[in-house]
Length: 285
Picture 1: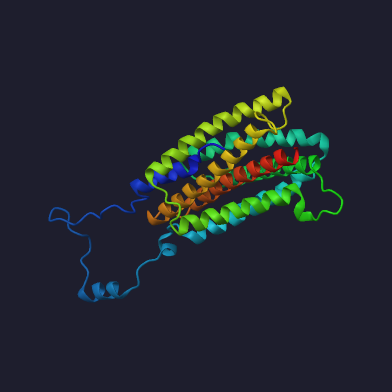
Picture 2: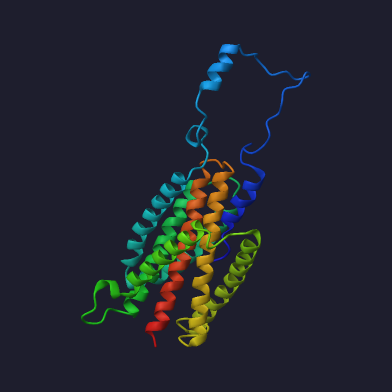
């Protein structure tokens, strides 16, 4: 739930240029003439060739990010199914294990110099197990009433809510309703970092004090905390979209599509969990 360090890292690198992209080419001088003079016909043939596209130069494209996101999301869903069906006695292990693994791996992935696809895949597995377990806990705590349809369940409603917020923020960003400026980015980043510290404290408070929803419980304070967290996660999505656009515009290497996809899923899972928590608070009243 912290500020997404994956996108922060990519955004910083995009300003410096990736693998030489965006840097002015060195001009040959009398002291260092260009190697291998070309004939007029070779120059003409080179001029007539089409420009190298992102695929030929292995630069990042939006399709790369979309495909990697779908792939990682599929891995996460598969292991969410595993987490959902864990025996009750093993659920606590899956829950705490998922938290520990995602916390450690998240930091390693974000600050590791090289892009590690295996670590990103392991993160998706651990995150899936965690999401599956916590979703099943909410499903059992707030079961369907007689006569209610499947879409009235707390988990399907949280999924629909997440998709709705994602679609709304994407439209708002693409249409310019939400503009990500440097000031906007800084404010959201610091707000998310502050909320991450609060969330850690709140988790310990809920765990030690046996308070299911932590600080605020099911009262107005708890409701306000959930609404604030959902709004913050939504704004973080806009920052994520902008970071993806910046990376593509800067000509980032294709390998960064794994980091971008990973970072986007982290934000989406955070948003889903906050919506799930809000629905739980509302149904407890």
